[in-house]
Length: 110
Image (cartoon, rainbow, N blue to C red):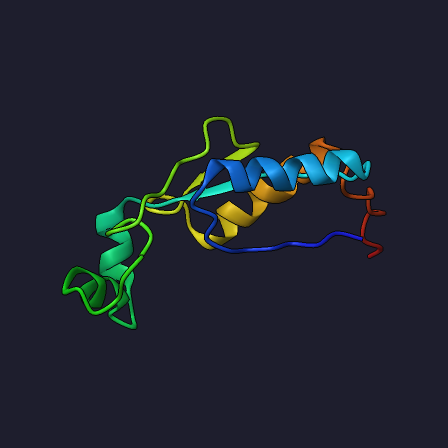
């Protein structure tokens, strides 16, 4: 079974703790850093949350008035300002396969 969890995890100590818990339980862990420059994230913001954070209407907003500590050595780093969704997904699947997290599949029958 594979669980994929996507969330903003701004602090290294929290990500390190998650990795340590997995290691202690003998579970695989693949840290994927989905990187996007702040100006690109703001331009893509359909809800206007960055605008509200910059205006002081939202406090503690990661990257604006709260820090984001980039991973120093993620297992995978995706730059979503240049990679499309299909490419990013393929990169993650390749990394998971190389770590032995995926079962090989039989070739499609024609």
